Length: 364
Image (tube, rainbow, N blue to C red; front, side, top):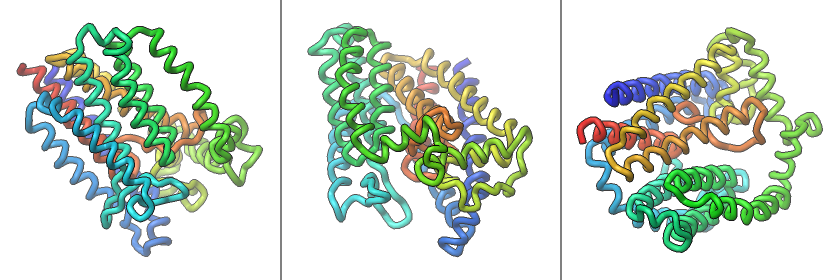
């Protein structure tokens, strides 16, 4: 059974990547021609990300995943250093007021993606080491909460609220499943609510995003523009879509058509059939991943695979929710499909680790 789960997980991932390659070219070729005089600009870069991601996924599949445990703390420390360095002008790259990237020629590296992986690995290692003491406050709750708090602080400084909230939810679910008292988690959530309120409503663009989400037509040419154009794209596709390459919303109407709103272009060009197909593929991915989680050979593998799957699922759910207008606008890519270097590569690494855990569970 576990072997079939690994094969199915691999096949679904390949299908999603292939869909992404086609849709990235379709959504970006006009924009790429207008800006870079090369309609294949984003396609060529994304294919290079696919190659890098595939090589790294094969690399992490090639050794016993349990050896990662001894690097859990160094990875967290490394992510802290990188998250700090990216905030320094001249080192980190600033785009649209956010300083989240290191720029290396054609590749932009986002240290928050490494931080996500590092914190998930650390939390899984911590839970497996502490055993029953994970249910206690000082020895079971405070250490992972402190690591999470520091990571979230640095990510919020970029600023990147969506990634910080997603990581926080993933870690809290992992700790809850491990047996941490619900009262501790509820206390943390209640203490975080005032800070979350301030972070949203004291920052003008975040406040406007919430207001635009509630009624995008109050500012149709400003904060509500993306939501409106995204819904137009989804609605224009009908049942079967207008055909690949025939989207009108990608013609400089819908911003970030090949990144954050690629699901909307899929809806326009492939219709309801295409969007439902993508959702079904992610559901199949989750189902196969759950089989790997259940058959993990040890506690570390169980919680590591759980954290990785939760992060991928959250990103997919948020991206689809934003495209459909049921969640406020947030720049999280659609895993395996959206254009994006470091995010795509770390999603591939996550799949490589899942395959590794599944293989070890098959032959412990």
